[in-house]
Image 1 (cartoon, one colour):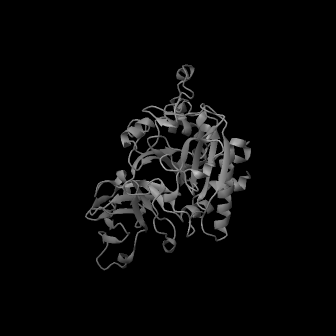
Image 2: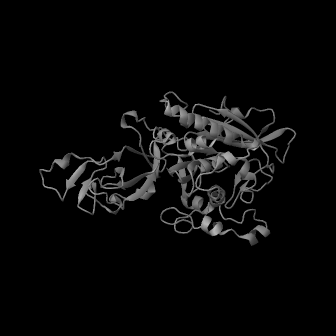
Image 3: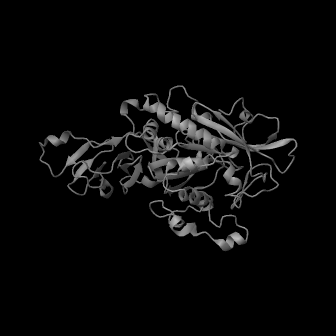
Length: 426
C-alpha cells in the first residue's frame, strides 16, 4: 500500500477525506448510560478531532455541543446542568440543547451578542447510544437503526474501551477472521459442538483449522465475506462457515454464537485514537451488561478508568503473564479485547501498511483497503460517501452467520443461525 493511500485511509481530522465520509453518517458520541440522568454531570466526548460535551437537560433531552464556550473558550464540561440548559462556570452563559444562548449573565439585557448561537449538533438515541450528525445540516439523512439493533426492543449489551491507535487498524482487526484461531485460541477452543457455543468463560468452536479459505463479495454498504474452515466432524461432507459483514464506514457484524449476536463499532476519536465498542445483542436471549463486561474483562472501575482507558495497556505490556503461557494460555493476556488491543497498539499510532506482506487469509483486509481508499478519492471528487447514497440495502436486513453447512452450499444463502437460509445474505 502506498504511503499516500495509507494517509487517505487513516486521517479523519479537519477536511480529511475519510472524515468527510464519516460526516455523512450518524456517529455514536457516547453510550446513553453515560448521560442517563436529567441535569446530571456533563460528559466529554471527542469525534474526528472535535471536542464535544454531552448532557441531558431537565426534560430528558440530550444535547451535543462543542466543548468550549464561544465566549472565552472555557470547557463546558465543568458547567452547571440545570433548568433546561448548560451554564458555563466562567461568566454564566447558559446554552440549550440546540445551542441557543438562554442567558448571558455577564452582559447587559440589550447586548447584541444575544443573537449568538453555540455550535450544537442534531442528536438521536437508539441501541443504547447517543448519536450525532457532525456533517452539513442540509445534508442530514434520516437516522437508520443500526444493523445490530434493528428494533427498539433488541437486547443490547455494550463494552466500551479506548484504543490508543488509528481507527483503521482497529477495524482491520474486527474484519480479520483468521486471527481468532490463534490470538483468541484460549478463549475460543475447539470442542465437539454443532456451532459456536457460549459458556461463562469461552466460546467453543467446532473447528481447529487455523488457515481459513476466504471468499469476499462487495456490496452497496461495504462488503461481506466467508471464512471457510474444515470442521472436526464430517470434514468430507461439511464446512464450517463464519461470515462477517462490514457496514461502512466503521461497523462490523461478527459471527454470532448460540446465545447472542456480535457487532463492533470502531469510531475515530482523532487520527491516532479510536473508541472501541463491542455489542452483544439478540432479539430475545442475549447476555446482561454486567456479564458481558465481565466476560470481556472490560468492567469500569476494575479493568477501565473513568475515561474508558485500560488498566492493561502497552506501557505495562498488557500485564502479560508468561507463567500462564507456560501453563497453556496462548497469550497470557486477560480478555479478548485486551488481546486485540495489544496487537493493534503495538503497530504504532498509525500502522505503516506499505511494509505489510499480505497472504491468502487477508482477503477481507485487502478488500477494506481498496474499497475505503477508493471511497475517499470518490468523496474528494464530490461523490456521495460510501453507504450514504439513497436506496441502499436496509441495515436491518444485514446479519452475520456461523455454522456447519454442506460443503457444496453457497455461503451467501445464509444469514443468522436462527433464521432459515435466504436467497442472499444482503
